[in-house]
Image (tube, rainbow, N blue to C red; front, side, top):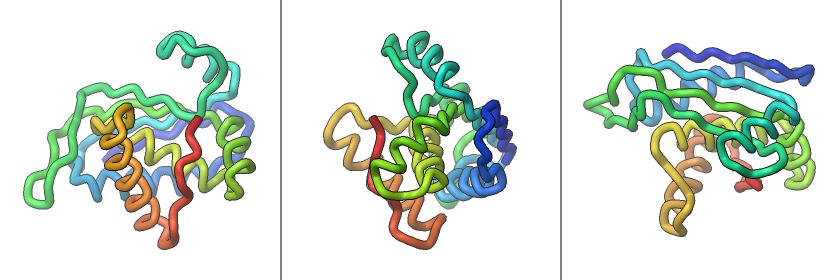
Length: 157
């Protein structure tokens, strides 16, 4: 698995932890071992520009996902197809605000947002109540498995 992390912010982020999380989630979701993922961290201004351009919504957001090859999860015996999973764009400034409001660390919030973004890249959504239950349960399961502790609940805007 190829995971590229590009931090374009002055915020110190544990790139290795994000990379390990990415590998863990891809492995747990049985994504092809040659899949590619990019994680980009941007400041609030850059995130706001992306948010307006792609979602037509003002203000910065916490995470945006840009799927490329529309890869889907595989199974234990049959991993998904190889290809480029896509890009996850994170905003540490928004993550820090959300983490403070939720009472957990900014690092935990970035793990939550990365997992959330990866699930979007794999075709999960939360527009409908049943979809939300499924996606957020899987998100908590993956985070708990990775960290070895209870995962923070959703804090997305």
